Length: 365
Image (cartoon, rainbow, N blue to C red):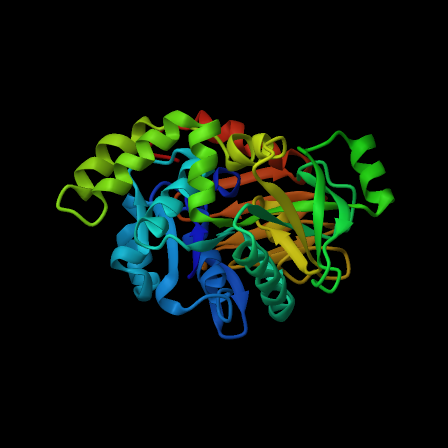
């Protein structure tokens, strides 16, 4: 059967101070739609319409967010929320889902989605997912990843190189030649110019048992721990075993822990599926700014009153409180004002926010 798992465990440190301990970025209602603001997680959950049945949609996130997510998305309360005692990176989140789905269903095939992205149009997304799921259902030894048509020579994303097309997929599926993680600018430009590379979307389709087999071969310590969790799942010992074992699992990403070694593993093959969509990774304040309309000089604002004079390409964000931010002669500046903290930085320094966050006192994070 088909399953889906949304990974929603990121802390969102590059979206501080709106993203804080207890309210990670995926739970902030700051995506503005016609019916009102919604969270990235709500958008991701809605995206699963037409992909898998309601009862086989899951979220994997920190256990400490269970109550908040259950209130936000009541359908995911209970067993459809896989609560991690602590974050152990994406390899273990995906392995956790594979262990649970495959425990009682030897034919379980599941897609792995994220709660970080805005993807449009929906019908193109659903079509690509259908191709990916079908590929794994026909051949459980296939691992599917999704490629986004690049719009510029990005250095912050991984790339996948297109090999030969796979018959019967209307040109959407192809053999993956290689993965390249976050290339330097000249190489990224060459990839973009070639037309044969895609951004790695960080979404996958796996057969649950195949994924566990890969863990056994390439990440045996993770495999052993996840098997203990799998054996206890659904028993009175479930929570105790999860709390004891999960925090001991070695931290690594699914790209490094499985996809990279799988590219050299003759027992499996990696398939890419083109997803020709508008794709925005909302992982920083500049990328969030792309969700907002701009005035004639590139200024954007939401959630706060702004007074500007002689400003260009500024981004001002507030939490909806009765407050005015005034800017004079500012250019390429980001201001984020919340009740508890205010951030001011040049847009060019947005990547440094993670470093600042690491040095903050716990009560401020």
